Length: 136
Image (cartoon, rainbow, N blue to C red; front, side, top):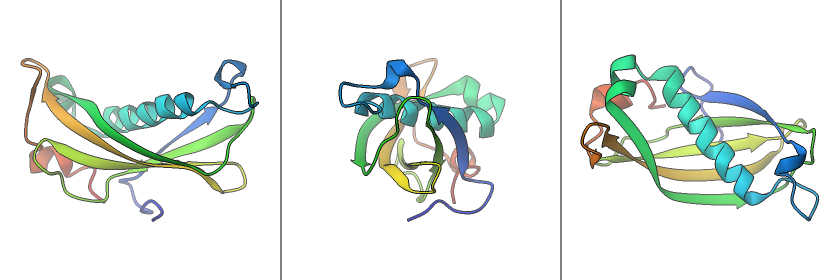
């Protein structure tokens, strides 16, 4: 499913560097994993109110990634992320697509994140006021 065309989806542009390239001549899968985290945390930083950013931190509990294409050094992709469903307790799923310059989705991921209280490092339930700015 493509991301929603509203303010609740979020995008960043990423350009592959020589350090991102593996022996096959394209971006290494581990780099895409880092980019997934980069777009997700950028979304949190851009949208969450300061009091939520100061109180909570997110950790990944699961990544499910489909690799459908790739790019080479110097090429760019747009990383788009969005939330499709309500949180479940301390967790919610985040969708991430990386789209190449031709508009083709080359990496698609569903990731599960859990929210921790920064002060205690303990899981906390995602309250509606925390999730509301992100729910599509």
